[in-house]
Figure 1 (cartoon, rainbow, N blue to C red):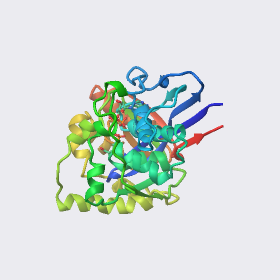
Figure 2 (cartoon, rainbow, N blue to C red; figure 1 turned 180 degrees about the vertical axis):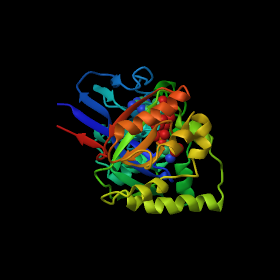
Figure 3 (cartoon, helix red, strand yellow; figure 1 turned 120 degrees about the vertical axis):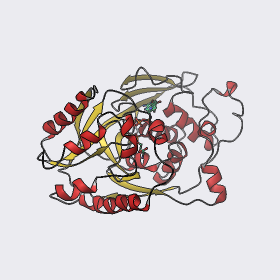
Length: 346
Ligand SMILES: Nc1ncnc2c1ncn2[C@@H]1O[C@H](COP(=O)(O)OP(=O)(O)O)[C@@H](O)[C@H]1O
Ligand SMILES: N[C@@H](CCOP(=O)(O)O)C(=O)O
């Protein structure tokens, strides 16, 4: 019988919580893993979102590379033979819905299963954080729900271990072609990430308005400044403090939440990468749309996330109309906040 690994999409930031909060959403990356006695490296098949982009070579695919990193850190130098992995993916690539975070978590869970390692949740997070270095998406994808996280301040040697270039953590080539493959991989320091799950009012749904173009997280991060004014930092901290409780209150208060989802740390700097962004954020409000609670950029974008208790179609249509004026086509979906990753073993 097959092993199944299921990892949800995520929306990070939720306005003011840049690199701090994330929400797991009901779109899934699903791996079906079978193991038989056929010799050779894993055989990958893939359907769904990203099917024309995701490499099927297990030494190039993000999920299997992460799994191999986890195995190598435990003294297992190669994939077990006869592994067949079928990937079914609902999370669009490069849209700000955590596709790479989900692929990384799936890889950690796959490594754990293939090596029979029985890693704790905290240790799984350490491995994920060695690859995806901001904690918001991977923590929400692993734990599920509305989650806040921070990275522990590491001592000198742990900082050095956690700053190893990604190319060394995840070498891309098969052993025979990769210089330095025989070296031990960099082990993650222990207890890098710490998190808490906030309450979530179940009547709140997430409308994801998803532009039909990709924006890589790396490019959207490169647009951000190195430092911020005290005024802007306080603006975000005040809102985030209120938001983490306000989204758990039932019934939710649109006036409180709409203002608490404003941001000055990332959205203003990403507007040149997402045509229509400021207009969408300012034109869809609780005053114009009954049921709307708040609206923000999902992760690094370009998806817009509207939190609402109703009026989903009208919210999505208004945001789509703004994007259409900027020649951006969109898809939209109403998503629920869901649980974290699961592994089903026979
Ligand atoms: N299921 C997957 N399998 C393999 N690679 C993936 C998968 N999901 C995402 N990726 C990789 O992550 C990239 C997108 O990551 P990123 O720019 O961080 O955007 P996102 O906001 O979707 O996480 C893809 O272009 C692809 O290289
Ligand atoms: N805090 C990060 C989150 C990136 O999320 P993604 O879903 O776009 O990968 C950021 O805003 O850069």
